[in-house]
Image (cartoon, rainbow, N blue to C red; front, side, top):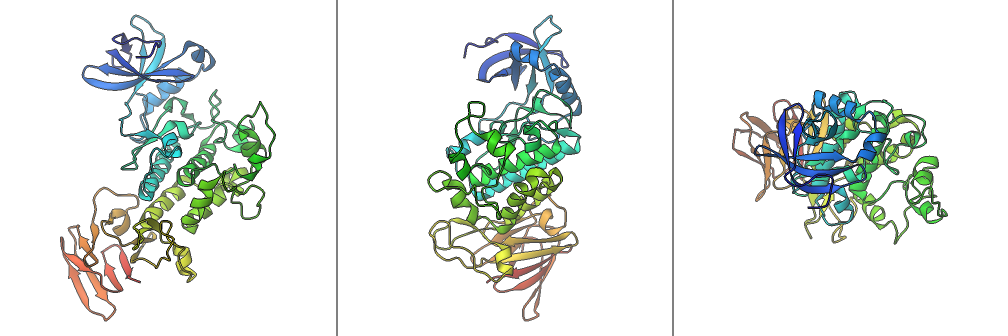
Length: 442
């Protein structure tokens, strides 16, 4: 155990629960605080214990934490405070308790270092969960204030996330000592024009998603190679990201393009993604740089992350993940080459789902499951699968309790009951009840 402010076996008090908290071991340390594993009875939690010098500079900390504890967590993805902790026989708080992060969750920094290489499906699940969690946070009138690579953790196998440093969270637009992290702050916040707010969070979310999908910073390209060193701005974040930001893929300004040998990840990955995702990033880092009202909203990211996951298909030659790009199909243009073997790709089997609240496209690959989100117009409901794609030959298994009706090109009709498989040998139309699916095999 590191030599820290607290010792193994030391007893503290959880104030609301009026329970003894026993220190077990140290989990980490930072500039503001140290993190410990703590036990109450047989249950284990994380304890964040602040350095005295930090407490003096953040007088509103306990007020923020009490408000957070009173409101409760917006989603289970937040490592949210649930009690304040003090020394025995003391009325002075020293830290707070929160759920402990399971070992299967690793930091986004590990993703940047390529110590984990999750699938595109996992990346899209991460992106959805981030956008969904921030939407719920903002709906509660709160803002995160400091979204960055260091306070997001993910499960490389499932895409589930955890958001830490929730002691930064405060009521939207409230003055405070936490401003954000250079390179992630919205320009108007970094330049001191406004307090951290939900619109600034949306900007930071876009930066974070750009890192997740393109493994680079959206504003650090050619220009970072020419700026002279400035000790007041050692990583150039203020000059490149706040004072004079230019998106590295700005369609009207090529002055900051990513450079081979320096920015290889964005160069390699940008063409892989569908045009719809590239358009959102372009909006976020062009008009969204200066107009907070033009930024990509959380619900737009949720929708795009679902569409991205549904657009994945596998190269028939090498098995690499690729994306079906609906925009190219509408323009009658061919897909780009496979990102793995670089051979030409044909359009995969797919289904267009049409419902009262819009349409969705899903590629038909083995194991793909459809949910109420797809078939019942109940957006973002992924609790129970209602259908699953099977192969050998290609078909769709009915996992619901209802009955489907299918009609082929020749007009023949087929009823598909629960647990039956509908063969998909050619283009057909399926009535799922609340949604109609149009299948294209080629």
